[in-house]
Length: 480
Image 1 (cartoon, rainbow, N blue to C red):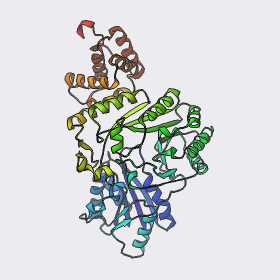
Image 2 (image 1 turned 45 degrees about the horizontal axis):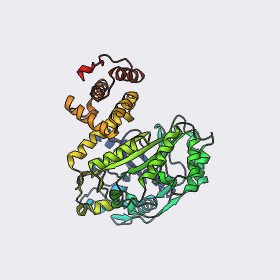
Image 3 (image 1 turned 90 degrees about the vertical axis):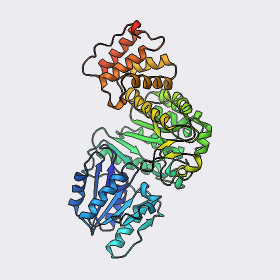
Image 4 (image 1 turned 30 degrees about the vertical axis):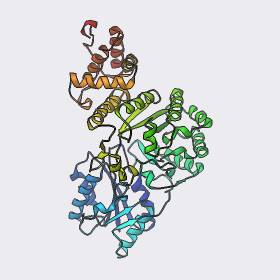
């Protein structure tokens, strides 16, 4: 009996770990398992061709906020072509509100929660001619061992690995608030399994999907100590709680070769009332202090996250967080609150006065503290940040402009207004030459700007980053 496991990823560089976790128990049960993936840029027809050509008896779809609509459309079309095949949905987007899919006749079963044991049991029942319930709620809580990638699945440069499941925190916007407890592999097992990635050649990154990798400081330090060994040649990405780092953690991290370790930290907000309303019990100052210390080391890439639209956060308080986080990280990500099914904030949205989109990804439209157009402006500022700071090519010029402004957030707010008035296009639609010109003209308008210095910095940035030098940037002081 053939089982086809399918995931629609958000981009080509991504792969899906969940369907790979389902494969071993299914194969142990005697099923012929095929793992198939696509991405949101693939056409419906091409994806349907791939799935229909498999002629599977059972199709399992991995569902997330970014792919649910496209996945449902694909599953519906597939059912018309293969009406006898069973269609099963799983994943976070269907696990906490399965009832909303009741009217969709092309869906045979939904697996809620962790799927390794539940999916295998469901497929055995279907093979044996039993009639299982439409919705299966999994109670299992386990970790799949080893590296789950196989030959033919290694053409990408980003691989995922899970050393722990669950989170010690219960932040109201996160799906971890819907579960409790953490289970983890030992440091020794984690290092053994990370070493398995050495069989994949090239410059690859292993991203650990653990919610809070360093929830156990002793275990985390043991893994980092092991990875210092030169036999581990890959890059490793960890999501951590910065305030849990101890002196041993800082010492170990400081000893890694530049670029070998990447850290991701969720600051989210510096507003105490906001953090309390989200049941996020962290001290933002301790997080920022730890992040600055890591960033100042110079060898560890640190990605810091903010979330706009949280209850209690205004446009100004987002700006305060932006300013305090800007120099504390290698990359600052300004994201936007999405009210995921199963989270406490979605349950309490009406009481909190939060308005959000009905369709995935359920992004917040407004709150009592921040309006729709303020959030839209923050979207554009987020894009400017990604383009000018994180995208590279503008480093010296941008640093000079921010220094003149005194406030990173104030600088990007002013740049957003300037581009809106001068060009009118979203930054994503502006070409690179025009991006340089607009940055130049904005910084030239700031008090204290030295035009000769700006001209030198911009041409140097351009020469380092672009194929040919740019011309015509010289602006006289009188033209400011």
